[in-house]
Every structure is written in structure tokens, then in C-alpha cells.
Image 1: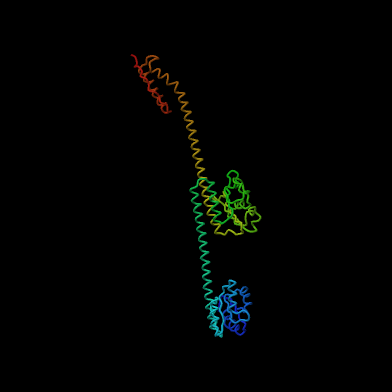
Image 2: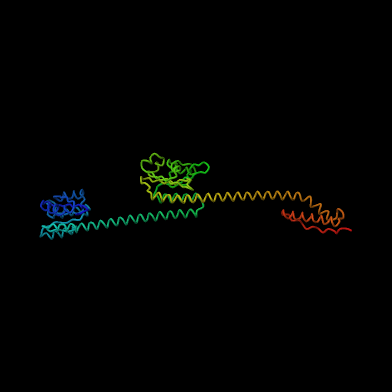
Amino acid sequence: MNTNAERILLVESDPDICDVIARQALQPLGYQVQVAGDANTAIQQAVQFTPDLVITNLNLPGLSGKDLLVALNSQGNSTPLIVLAEKGQENNVIQAFRLGASDYLLWPAREAEIISAVERVLKQVRERRAGQQLDRQLQETNQELQRRVRELTTIFAVGKAVISITDQRILFDKIVEGMVYVAEADFGWLLLRDERTKTFLLAAHRNLPEAWAKKTGQPLDDGISSLVALSGETLAINGDPLQRFKVAALGKSAVVVPVKIQQEVIGLLVVVRKTDQPFDRNMQALLEAVTDYASVSLVNSRLFRALQESADAAQAGEKHKLEQLQALRKEILGQLQPVTYPVDLALTGKMGALTDEQRQALQTVQSALQRVLEMVGVDRPPRSKVPPASG
């Protein structure tokens, strides 16, 4: 029994021959057999019935079997064909082969011969179809492989940009560009939350119309991003459900992916297709991978900003300390200068002779003053020699 239920068009005007071929030989094996009594009817049924095989008698009323072959060929119909001929029509069979016939049967023929010829031709049909199916599968596999390579290449490029580009505006443009390319989308944009107002501002975009693009640095309400900002989950929407949102002005299919830092939504990546082609789960996962790079960039930015603020605070603290030290130094100098002069003058002996005890005491004071001045960074010129104490 034929499990494929292949279709056979039998072109035969003799009801006895039709009965032998169709009812007795082929239908019991599961083949779908349709009968046409002449070539004109067969040409019409070849279009409507789309047979896998045509069996035609060379001797038909009106157009012959060879005429049928020519007509089918002229229509680009490549359905294989078996011709029925009587003994003595070998030349006609040869001509039929030249016109594209696949096999022949000399009538009268036994059921086994009919089945053998049909199976022989249909085996070639199956093999050809299997080859075509394999070619399609290989082509689809190759296209899928190329798409995967393109996706991986894009993700690698975005990852490389995250660690090599320090200007966040350029980096965000690269991320959105890569996201639109990978998703095979027509539009894309990135919204980032303003820490002060908690609103989402347009940070980067790709292919947005002027009316939308001019909102760069401003809040952008597309109708669906706010839902994702609240839920924290990726949202893919297309077709009629999308029509209620503003983003429907751009396309018929959209996906919004949240950018998170420690489960906190701090950004939103949006891509839109003009056509009603939904974003499948694999594509959503890929876009989520791209948003991870945006998260890394924003984390790095926060860390750098915190480090910069810490460095600025430390620098400001050091400056304040230095100012305090300068003020203290000035105050110390102001207090010491009135003291050092009379000590130095007394040691010169101009104010009268000094006893050894007095001189030693004044020299001790002078040394102490010198050390204090050195501590605050003032170099004191060498002391002039003083005369020895008198008797």
C-alpha cells in the first residue's frame, strides 16, 4: 500500500484500459488516480489536479499523446510521463522520449508491468524531491548559520565597544545600532532614567523620524516603555494589540527590554519593525544580552563618577587642610617674630653684659624658637657671634 497517496493522471479513452490500470493495478496500492478521456481535458486537469505522474496513450482522439507532451512542456510542466503504445509503434515511443517522456508501456501489459513502470518513475520523483528538500534544508541551515554569526559578531563588537569607548554618547549609539541590526528592525532607541527627576530621557536612537529624534535629552513617551519600567520584564507586542499605543505610528511589531542594575530599571531599549513580524523568544534573549552590555556601561559610569567624586572630595579636603596649615603658620610667625628679636638683641650684649647663666638661658630660648620656626617651614639666618660675657 502506498502511504504517500501520490496522484496519477491517466489520459485514456478506452474504459477497459482505464479499468485495468486505475482500478485493478494502482488504486489498490493507495494511489489517487484521476482519468481524462482526451488531451484537452488532461491539460486542464494537470493544472487543477497537480499530479505526480501522467500516464497517457499515444493514440488519443483529437490531440495525440505526443501533442499532450508538447503542450505540457510549453507550460513549463515538468511532471514525469509514461506513454502507452501498441506493438509496432516503437518509432512513436522514441519520439515521445525525445519530447521528454520518462518511460513507456507496450499494450497489452500485465498489472505487474504497470506497477513496475509506475514505481520506477515515482522512485525518481521521490529522489528528486528528497534532493530538493535537502537543498532547501541546507539553504535554511546556511542562512541560520549566517544569521547566528552576524548576531555573535555584533554582540562581540558591542562588548568590545563597552571596554574601549569612554564617551557614553558614542557607546550608546553603538549599542542601539547593534541592537537594530541584530533584531532586523527598522527603528531603535535607548531611554535612560534621570536620577533627579526619575523620568526616562531619550539618550540614543537609530532611524527615528525627526519629530521623535528632536526629543534627544528629553522625556519620550512611546506608550509602552512605561509599562516595562514598572514591571521590569521584557515586553514583545505586535499586530492589533500594538495599535492602542503611540509607537504604532512607527511600525506593527515592537519589543521593549529593561536595562537593570541590581533589579532596578535604569534604562529601556526599544526596537520596532514596520512589518507585523513578531520578535520570538530567541530574539528577545539576544536583545537582553545586548542590554546587559548597556548595564555594564552604566555600572562602570556610576563607579567612575563615584570615584571621581571621592577624588574631588579628597582633593578639596587636602586643600582645606593646607589652607588651615598656612593660616596656622602665619599665626605662629606672627607670634614668634616679636619674641625672637629681643632675645637676639640681648645675646649681642647691646643691652648690657650678661652672666653665664643668663646667656645660657637666652641661648636655650633662642634654640627652641629656631626649632619652632623650622617646624613651620621658615629658615632662620645664622646667628651672629656674640661677645663673651664680661667678668
